[in-house]
Image (tube, rainbow, N blue to C red; front, side, top):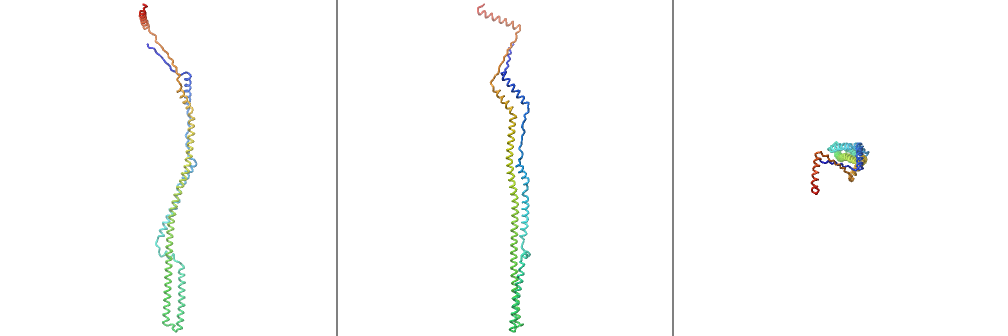
Length: 294
């Protein structure tokens, strides 16, 4: 039978003891649950909350300005249409000077008084000449009356024309003033609408500025939360790092293995022993013969 050899390779006893201790420590550490730190998310800070509140209250802040501007434009349109109507006799009559008739009446009364004086003078002259009641006197009275009527008619026409012209000019001026006022009112309405839009935009800029400040503070708080969690996480896994560090050292340690070899030979049977002795005797005899012993 063939020979069987068994070889056992082991670490040196002291190194093997260290490694067994490492395995026990690792097993005990692995059996313990790791207390992982929770994630902390930085919420809105006060600046961001204020910005959101301003954003909510500022929604539609332009509406009062837009409504007022729209009303002003509507009124300006109505005023423009009213002012753009044709000037009629009634409009002119409204601007006639009420004192013109009084002045005219005084002027006509003065003309009558002057005519009466002239009439008296003609009568006195006719009496002195003895022609009172004659045809000549009648012609002079008629001519005086005709001149008075003509003069009064001219005065009335001139006063009427002058008053009408002044009234027409005043009506036109008033119409132009109304058109200008309507235009200004329309422009004011447009400006009010634009002011509402500008106020809304400025408010939004303030909200964005305040929110951005809060967002920067929020980012800083989040960084602090992340740094705190990373620190706690490192502390939780620090024992595992130490075990890993020690394991790496053991892996790099120089070899201290020892080999134990044990060999076993099978016992030959009786036949094999006899055959062996015969062969051995034959070999010995042959050798002795060659050596000259026999």
